[in-house]
Image (cartoon, rainbow, N blue to C red; front, side, top):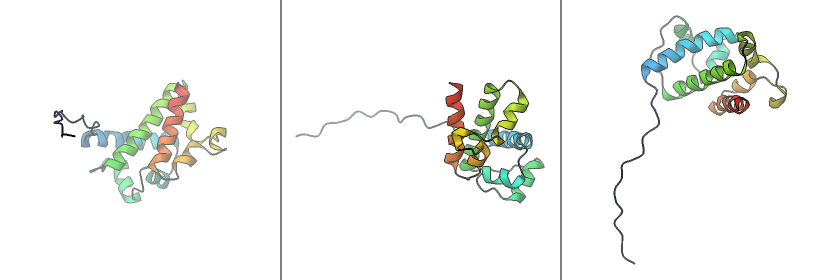
Length: 135
């Protein structure tokens, strides 16, 4: 069997990159979202992948700084959760309160309880759940 020459083709495009400016904007939005969700700074730090309380305090003061890919991904997923809730609920109060409400689909736990486990996959679980609910 002879070797066959395989024609070169361009590599597939990489996944979209979240720029530093976009990351900073998402961080500012997340600070506001967490205030509306009425979660503690410690809970916010867990949702953001173990961010130090000092760093989160700087975020709240408007100094975000450089974000790594994990934090940018977490921010993207959390804001996706927010977007899905805003689509599902016409009343803002219900959309913001949903994350703390017990949910039979989560064994009586709230979405926040699930997300506070700390794993990125837990954030995705809530995001996918809401995406499915949206249809």
